[in-house]
Length: 396
Image (cartoon, rainbow, N blue to C red; front, side, top):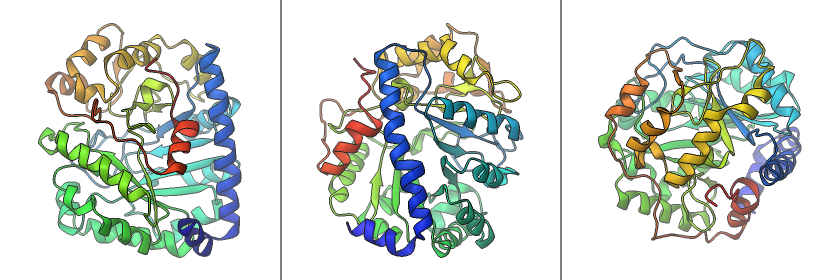
């Protein structure tokens, strides 16, 4: 109630209506249709598409899977086609990633064209000027998710820039000034754990006007993976416990996509809930596994056919679910390599070193906490996890 009242006061009615009409209700129906397709063994199409529109970025963060200096990107015709094809299957919510997606020309025009869809814009916030925020307000169907990877010193160190935290927070304040519904995200690693996994960070986010906080677990990936930054088993358990406790009374919505309502680990790719479309047009199992066998054509009109017929994605869903409930890249990289050898996969990045990176990866603690499960205590969040974005029986 407190969160709802705060969002109601700071957000224009039109944006609130767009959130309910474009996001809340359509996605409940979308999840229902997705579960029905899965139960009936109908041709596969994911519930949601995560779309990386460009490799280009103005920062170079440690542990990011995006290629530094990469220039691959989807054409506007491909992006438009992905959205149109997804809508045919009831999917009207899209995660828009990069690189830095605000460096992709024509993006806001795409948002406005598909004004009956809803978009979550994953951004580092440094390009979120007052003018950009105003344009997003005009579109009305976008929620920026702004990455805050630590406070002043940690942000500069982790993201290899100057005054990154200050520039990011300027973007946060531009969103608040424009009345946008927005969130803050963090990939929790060893060096930012103490700064961000605490009640003070939650209160700080609320004071800045954020409606939600999205916590990720650091996954060493890319050319600068830095596995020494991965969380320990105790830290992962502490993060889970923190989220459960704070979710009961936090002034913002706390979100994770790692555990179901009973605290069992989940992989969105293994459930089929979500797959990733890369800047090269590749259909990837998830953003950090940058290999694929299937690529969209010039207008993405073959997207439905590719998803329905992809032996690679079907095999990955089945074999990953049989291997682990956590992240296979962290839990069992050797098994991941064994699976990949069965398919004629192609590298989807500019750097061309992904397979070697996976070969060099060693076992790292993931989020599978069996047998020490920590169930959700928040009744609304338990309901959401059961009915909205988990519970697909992928682990049968």
